[in-house]
Length: 112
Image (tube, rainbow, N blue to C red; front, side, top):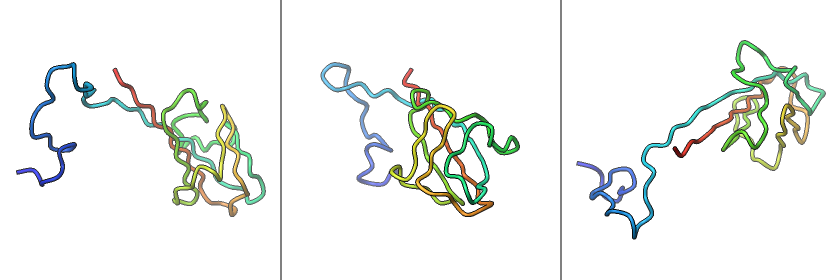
């Protein structure tokens, strides 16, 4: 029995035929990519050439190539106002401590 109050997770009744309601797309397909570098303690700009190949699955993607991006510095999720992402470039508001990992997580969401 599903918990009460969770119709989005456990729908009680299927959506009526469209129209009138907006159609639910169902399960969305996603792809997740990761760029990882390690801070040198001095710079606040990192490029594709700074990637650690052992931990990265992609270069720094262009904002037009992903749906969501998350930046983790030393495992802590950073608020978006502290960094900027451009194709091939990560710009931080300040240089992190030397040796800490910088992980950009790119999420692509496909609707069809």
